[in-house]
Length: 148
Image (cartoon, rainbow, N blue to C red; front, side, top):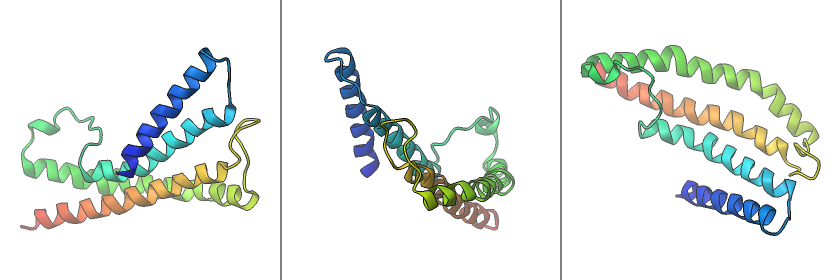
C-alpha cells in the first residue's frame, strides 16, 4: 500500500517540477533528485513483491506453450542458476561501495542536491536481499510441487 502512495507522490513531485520550471521559471536540483530517489526506492523495494505476484518480465517466448512440469523446471533452473547467483554477486560486489558511502556519509549527486547518496546506495543490498528471500521462497514452493 505504501508503494502506491510513493508512486503517487513521485508523479505529483514530477508534475510540480514541470509546472515550476515552465510556468514559473523556478528550478531545484534537490527536488529533481527527489524524483530520482523515489523512483529508485519504488523499483528496488518493489522487485521482490513483483516476483511474489509473478508479474516480472518473461523473455522466454515458448514458456506459455509448455506443460506445467516444464514451466516448473524452467523456473527452478532460472532461480538456481540465474537469479540467485546474480543477486549474490550483486550483493557481494556492491557492498564495499555501500559501506564506503556510509563511512563518509556520501553527499549529493549534484551541487545543490540531496545530501544522502549513502541512503540511495543502501537500496542496492536491500534489493538483493528482498529478491533473494523471495526467490528462495519461490524455489521452495516449486521444489515442493515437484516432489508431489
